[in-house]
Image 1 (cartoon, rainbow, N blue to C red):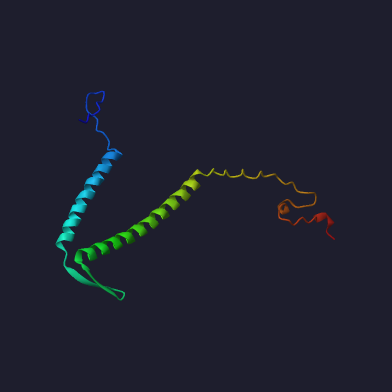
Image 2: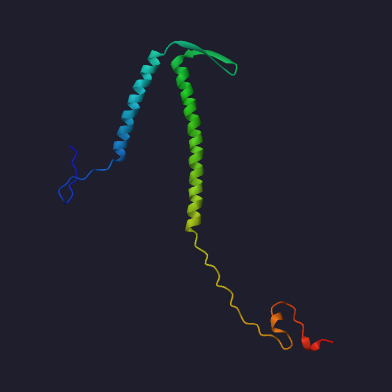
Amino acid sequence: MRQVAQEPTGRSAKLSPTRLSGAWTAVIVAVVLVIVLIIFIAENTRSVEISFFGVHGHTPVAVALLASAVVGALIVLIVGIGRIAQLRHTARANRAIASAPAVEPAPPAATVPVEASPGVAADEVGRGSHVRHDDAP
């Protein structure tokens, strides 16, 4: 008998599902699907002709339908695996970017006042045209 944990207030707490209970659920679903599959095969034993890329043959309807369903499921599985791999790669790259140490910007360069040299006009300082006015011909 399964016991339910009691909270200090006297109310019963809901237990979360375990991996084992999930496995039992999967087993029950699989058994039901196998039973349905057996019934499907038993009811569809009529033979049909199958032609595929020049190959001809006779097979029961159930086998042909199940084979096409399996091929379709494999295609979906392959595409799904590719998409999951792409999403994991993107998530890993985003985590790497987010966990990288932030680079702090360099402090702004100190502005040092430039004093005009003797004979250089104050408005010419910093323009690169240091023409001395007193040496003019």
